[in-house]
Image (cartoon, rainbow, N blue to C red; front, side, top):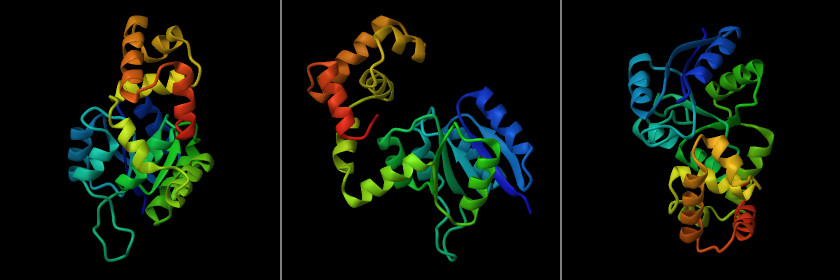
Length: 220
């Protein structure tokens, strides 16, 4: 029997690409796709997928909100028969990885993954394994070993909006305001406003301090 998969991502072209990739893989059946939290919840209730490929940042509350409203399958054999969640995201930031795993996902891979690799990850997740892109597994181990102060990360990032987090990460990685504006399809003036808000909320005085702050928390 093929593993029934739901693809959840707010970019239609990406959903189409994933469906095409998985259609070429034996043992995988994409039963539906969804673009936001509400449509994902509705699709899970209608199609009962075994594995949900879940983007981290979604309209309506993000991937964690989907898992809150539609609880994941329990890892024990007698647990709830919900879907298993595999995060598939462009983000490789520690707070996204850790937050998504804490929310109930069994794995986290980045969008650089190939079609055959993704099919293999889906089958492993459905079989009860945990699957991570190599670099990301270290974030989870560090979080549970105490190397990364998860509580501190959450407290600081909770002050920022989703867009401010995106600007923060790009600026901390060395992007210019113009490059951030191009990457996020916003104006330079909007980038400046978001950056000002980020520094104020985090009580930092410069982009150099921001880079150190983000690097200390493994957010880059």
